[in-house]
Length: 336
Image 1 (tube, rainbow, N blue to C red):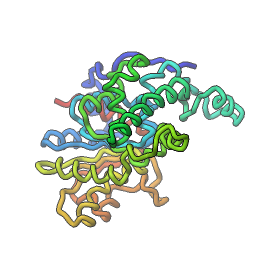
Image 2: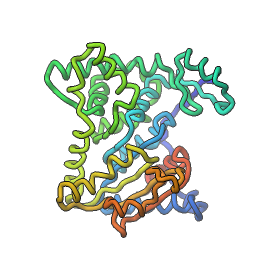
Image 3: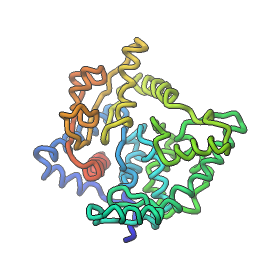
């Protein structure tokens, strides 16, 4: 079953969604969604900035429809995400019509999964990413970007290579959705930073390693490392907290969240310099809190690590981010 979706989400009138939430989201996780959205708006109205930390498979869930508009409207000023989310936004952009929707995925037997694999379809829950039309199409242009950097003795972060492909139009002939629904394109146009800690844990990160081993490139030196990403984050954070604060909006947990939020204790405890705490915190996660996982940790736990202050506005929405995040973004976008 092909996944068909047209139209640009940014053209919707978000005021209806906001009014519905105001009138009906009054308790439990629904109230937390509304309160977190209102606090997000107030945080920005004070002239502060917001960093989005995004785990999970949100790009394959087509979060770009609302996230791209958040970026365009200056509601998100920086992103820390997995390498998978970075690349999967582009995969959806260039291969959307070749994706397959598997609504009965819970009923698949191992042989059914093997059949999908043989057809070059990589399943993410109910959605299959087509290997030939998505992954293979990006590998060549990305490799050329790395080769050009090698020849010039230049080095870049992973997101900068993606920005180069976008600005050169390397993939434009393959676009299958409105590019206005690509959050990476929106980020590129705003030139905001995208940190991808652990980029090697992604399809294209794997490909760069393979290309080095196959002598298609001379090595990994053109791709800046995770330690360099953290150093870049320190500079960005200090610069963007000179006049106000930076908020932290977290989808899921794992490395995308922990990498970015650690910059504050790094500055205060390791560099032994003064800096402001994160000025707002919200996490969307359904992870259980009692197993020691970072994904399920309550916001208050972060106080003990020197990441948040006792009076930082904190919200934890225990629900499905594919439902919650677009609703929150719509609510925030409706604000004047």
